[in-house]
Image 1 (tube, rainbow, N blue to C red):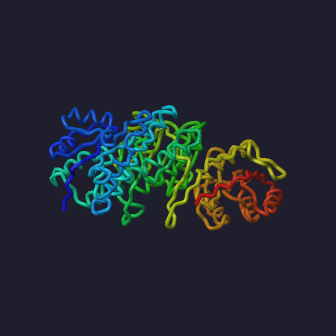
Image 2: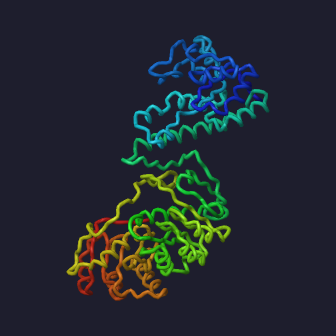
Image 3: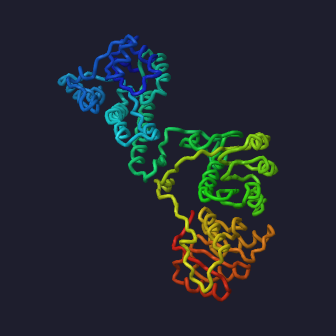
Length: 509
């Protein structure tokens, strides 16, 4: 049965789109309580308003920080209309019922994004508003809560259709939306306080922005993206990103962060692992070198580059079927070439700070960790063998380690300076990963003589070193830390190989 709305508390930051709802409340003779600027706005619409301070008998204080935090306001919202004792207390303390609460929240995230000083940001932490939303949502049996200006039109239509009233299920749905809004708001605030020196937005599983996906990992699974893709990319062409596209795009973006500085770089990924990575003096050459690593796996992959795509590179790219191409910019002529394929997704990546935390659902909860931002360079390498790597080998080891960090464990990466030759990914033993990498390198015509090897974790036995040495590998980087490190070091010395240790493991599960 529809329950009529006889009284409403309206106190909002954004006044746009509110007029039709105010007109409807006025039409139905609803008693309206309001504050400050909202009260003035409603009065300008020709509706009668009772100031909240008239209801409470207490003025706004502390520059408006305290306006609605009063028993007559919260009692009006929270008392249970079906409980005789609550009704008796409400009458005793002269607390009128409030059947509708229309409140939005101070624009905290917008203020942070504007680069405002901390004092201004703190003042945009809503206290009264979020308390009103929670109170009204809790008492949804008796109260309708409207938590966003995006709901005004739907609420106005609902009240029109039901002659100024609502059903219990209506109120339950709006209560759920209110709790989602407060959860998102609190997550944004906690993210601000937990952030490092940068103003990077913390990852929120409660993001208010949702994009339905065609399906999840497989067609029988539903999928949704929660977050603001528009803040990261301009999609210039192609079909909607799928669940699997997004997973690969995420892996691609994180990998390319390692190559933002220096020479043009290109990475080709398939199922989140790089099947080709290269740096060169031109983007055209970098792409061709990346493709040469594994042209079979590159089919249908995700490609990312660190420099604007020129026409010559676009002409080469256009010969390959790929799902997504990500670049900081596209030349006009390159864009014309690449847009010749209808469904090909072209993303222009915007500069943006990334979250400092990774969150993943697990069992009946979630796990969280810091992102692996560490990357070791020559300054971090500790030579543990009789011979040290040459300057060219050192450059190759740095390159291999960057790729290795973003490859599924257990992994082995084989490379030369500026080019991935092959990798063994996601294997249950490091020996299997190495054998897979060697086999792939040979399959695509690479001679491993003089190449280098990177491992995401230590070698528990000398077998990997011995196999790599037999294949022609001349230098190795690994974290070290095994009780049998000396066995691998001795094997390198015997084979004339150089080994450096970093002390940092890069597992990726």
